[in-house]
Length: 313
Image (cartoon, rainbow, N blue to C red; front, side, top):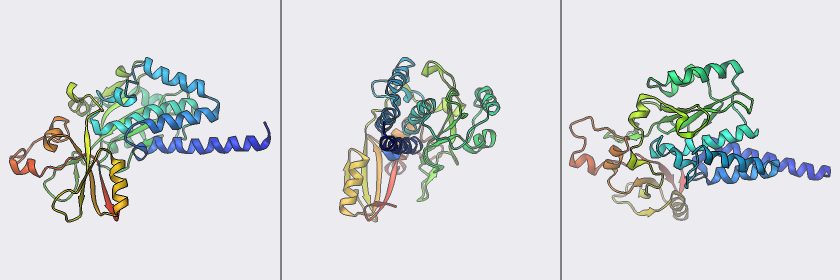
């Protein structure tokens, strides 16, 4: 192979590696499912000469029951609430990227730090824990997956520089609560730890849960990532919603075309209040909760995007 060909291949590797690490940090920006991870890691494997290894990794996911008919997301449906699946799903692909040498870590644990974390984490999550407590105890993560917004779910991954050391993943959850005011508040003041994925082998046996994670773990009728949602646009100062879309992407494209200002929000089919209570995103605790006026004014508590002149604010 000539030096020119080597240079081109090197540029291709760097290009794909950059995008692999981007999708593993902010997966929500690449779509609502894991197709982006599959395509980008598959392309990375091709330019790295590791396609056989990539195929073996995917086969391993299926053997460990970490990959269903709808992907890794399907395996997580009995672990986390529906709005916490995206970041957790990316963590499984991040583990593959680490084993293959493609993951750029923000911090590498020493071998001693990693052994201590692996030994302590199971007992640590027997109590409810918060994001700040996790970082105080274990330090900054090797990989932060998801938004830094305290009202959003996220996953923290910890590992060493060695590809032989698995990524230990803490799954944290929070979402918008209906506070009865214009101010947006979370169900919790900051994200709380729901589960940690830290054991090898069978996917379903790889987790330890906090008490809060067990309380909010999806029931049988909630364990489906195929839950239908719709995206509704409500113009600024408008009395009624003016558009509805099957996907976020369709809503954003329409908003850009028309240059509108307002909020594009995701709604579950059915009543927003009923869905929030059923999924554990809202717990009635005051006399007015569940009354006619409260239910009529209840916000969905799912994803929403502020738009100004058709662009994200």
